[in-house]
Length: 399
Picture 1 (cartoon, rainbow, N blue to C red):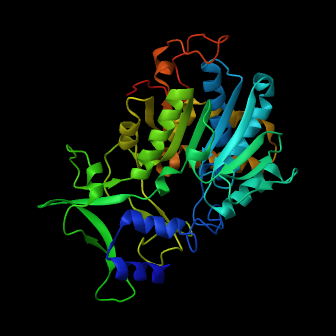
Picture 2 (cartoon, rainbow, N blue to C red):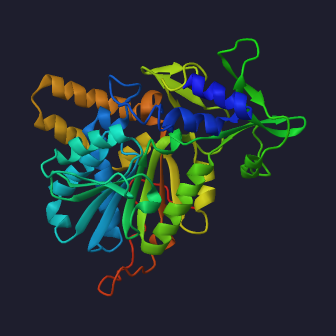
Picture 3 (cartoon, rainbow, N blue to C red):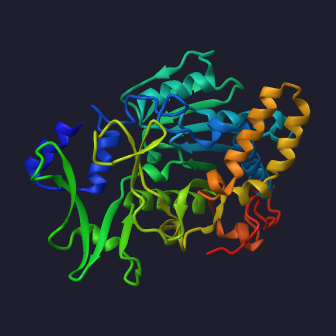
């Protein structure tokens, strides 16, 4: 990967941080995400669903609660962007099965957006156990199809645009933080984009440099920006716009959970290797690269089309969703000391402000009607007014 990047920079000049991230993470030949399973204890980082089953269960409850609050439509799609190992959607589907009496007349299908061949194979194994042979068609927008353990049809796509439009619940957990960001530094001459270049002193080393003049991506910076260093993710904006259009058109909701801030942080671009921080410019392709999500930017991109809630801290959202009650039920059910210890450790990791409790945020996109308590007709039979309280978000300060 380093050799490939050096060759690219020598041919065309310094590259943007966004291009650097894109190459390192998703290059078809050597991209970090394309050919490896980087999750879990043996990988480079662990995500919330890998820590505790309760996390996914509460998200499953959130989707059912939204489905009920918006008139119990006869069908919905569950769409996850970047589903990891499939653990999260597996936990959500288990809740759907357990609440089968509530969902019994509802037609559910699962749609996963995944660019990694390696991860899609792991997801298929987790979710279908290959009881029914998978259909594969590498050239098609739907590159894999199957049936989950509980009998729900499941499909894989490389791009959100290929997922059928329709009443859907979207989930993006630790998805936006790996999308490529452009970085900018304020200078006496105005904003200058940060680029990646070859270090003239050391021939096989990379370094950051500032662009000599303005670059096109500068258009994404707000004119009233007060920070002196800014990260902007145009890809996130494109996806939020697509989700917003779909939700405004056909209803449903999107739930985003990620590292992030509300337009306050500056330099958050970092690497993770073997659960430790790693210099982003050293040994590219061997570490995960990530940048905190700027939720103020996501909100701006959704404005007008849909309402947004959050960001709120993970511990607040999970508390509002009843994590304490669920933990007690699981502890009461278990006599196994090791299982009880695992449940308590998982709870601490998710809720402790010094661990994930405050580092992760929840953010939702909903149709405007959902929060106005107005009528929103899914079909002729269902025209009940919405309940305007949204589970998990205690504070209904929405934009």
